[in-house]
Image (cartoon, helix red, strand yellow):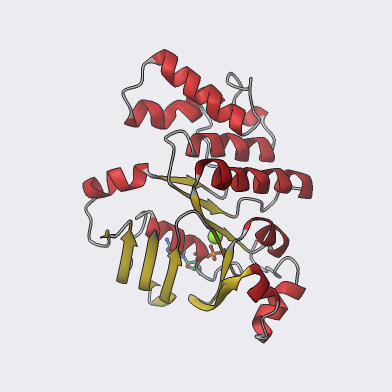
Length: 247
Ligand SMILES: Nc1ncnc2c1ncn2[C@@H]1O[C@H](COP(=O)(O)OP(=O)(O)O)[C@@H](O)[C@H]1O
Ligand SMILES: [Mg+2]
């Protein structure tokens, strides 16, 4: 389980997170929904300790990691997979080497084992046989799937998805959503998906938190969110894709 308690973060005097508290329960997919700029990506980066909060606490599997050193974070991070917004593949490496990267970095696997594991991860995302391709040869959706194969190589307990379907067509988005669901069902992965796309959010969420201007203003199951009487929640839902001036 992961818990954020009263997280604050300011950039250049501008408050970006203003007391964010949330809980990711074991086995669930939690969607963090909110407009561009409301603080979703920063929230993920704070969980992964790619950034430090100004105040508040980050509890991971019962341990307060807020003051952990980089070295202490290493084993914690190994249990976490991240799918970045732009896929963030290494452009100069083949698909095989992209997926094998963490295995080479963090395990003592031999070459045959690395090859087998990379093949298995690619099969999971339905990208078998693409090992020798370069990222530049892949479509946006294929890049996302390779990035997902890379993220699951170490068998994470937690997955974090930053706008996993943004910029993808509806069919490709559906495929990504199915993979998120399968990781949950088949591998008991607990996930946080951040998105501003309502339709995709409903395809994967067990529970929602809704963010606005660095605060969480509502939370609940899909049903609770759909039937919420809060005006801003209804505005979100009616908007379909949340109006988004920045992206
Ligand atoms: N490293 C940074 N330095 C300065 N400002 C940042 C940084 N990262 C994010 N911000 C600002 O924090 C706000 C929230 O950003 P972000 O979490 O990326 O929003 P989103 O909800 O779209 O993911 C934005 O106004 C953004 O410009
Ligand atoms: Mg973002």
